[in-house]
Each structure stands twice: as structure tokens, then as C-alpha cells.
Length: 232
Image 1 (cartoon, rainbow, N blue to C red):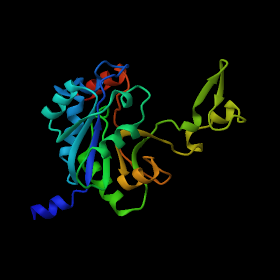
Image 2 (image 1 turned 135 degrees about the vertical axis):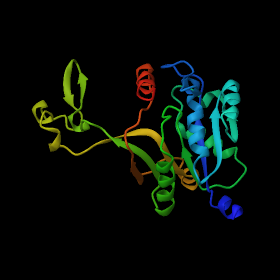
Image 3 (image 1 turned 90 degrees about the horizontal axis):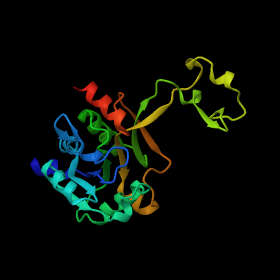
């Protein structure tokens, strides 16, 4: 029975934790409820029933120690050149794939900046993904105000985002007139190892939308204060 359970674990989780955050110093190890943010993603991974190995990708020896102390199975030190502000997710994902010496099919990408997750959501997302032919999966949540009502500013003038020829009066219609829109929330992304290796892309054009309840993703100090206030 235990062997059969292990063979069913064809996911690895990858948790990125670079040390050079500009918005909040050492954001990925900042304490929340007495635990580093990194710990929360590791703990979520360890409680998933399909995860073969929980892996942290970092550029910091300090973070490496914290990750192992928090329960990570493997910590990979990645090169500084793929740990910059403008580095892409695919860089550390490919670095991880290259440095893992056991078989797996799928990757669960968990960001430390979204510490509050429901383990049932993660397990369900993995189960759904294994049963379909989508190239990837991304968790999203509905935004309270449709993005069709959003603007950008050019030369101090408001422009509607989705159709430059539409005047502002149209975007001022009631929200019920517009489609619902969603934003990625960092709870999870799921990728296929084979797709990444073949196409040099993470998502592709068949991305399964897994809708979750709203959660807080930490981009700046205000987000972190809101998180502490909500879960104090």
C-alpha cells in the first residue's frame, strides 16, 4: 500500500525564494504568525498527497538553511544571473529540472508571497490537471470590479484599456454590463515537465482556470500589513 501511494506521487513542488526583493527586504523569509513566509509554502506542499518532493530554489545560503529547517526535501542554489529582478520564472524552473535526478511528470509552483492556501484546493487542482490535456493550470480569483472598467493614463488623460476608441462613458456603465474578469493569485501554477522541455515555455495556450476564493498576495508592505491584520 505504501509503495502504491508513493508511485502515485508524480508531482514535485518548486518554491522560489530569491533574496533580492526590493519592495520588502528579505520578503520571502519575513515572519508571519511566527513562521517565515517560505515555511507556509513548504508546509502546504508537505500536506499535498501527490507531491513526491518539496524543492526550494534560492540564491542564498541563509535561505537554504531556513528552507531545510522549514521542512524542504531539497534546496537548490541557483546562479545569481537567474535570480535578478528581471529574471523569468522559466529560468529557475529549468534549472530545477536539470538538477533533479529522479522521474516526475508535473510541477506545482508555489510562491511564498501567497502564504494562505487551502490544501483541498491544491489536491483538487492536481487531480483535475492529471485528467485533462491542458498545457498548464493557474489559480485565479474574481476581481470585484471588472477589468473592462479599468484605465491607463497617457499624457494625463484616461484611456480605456480594452478599446482605445471607446469613450469613458461606456466604461462607466454598471458592472453587470461587463464580463467577469479574474487575476492570478499565486496560490498555485501547475506545469507539465514534457511541455517545458519541448517548447521552452511554462504555460502554453491551453491554461486551465482554477478559480479559488480570494486570498492575499504580498507585493508590498501594505499587502503584508493587510495579511497580518486579517489573520491576527
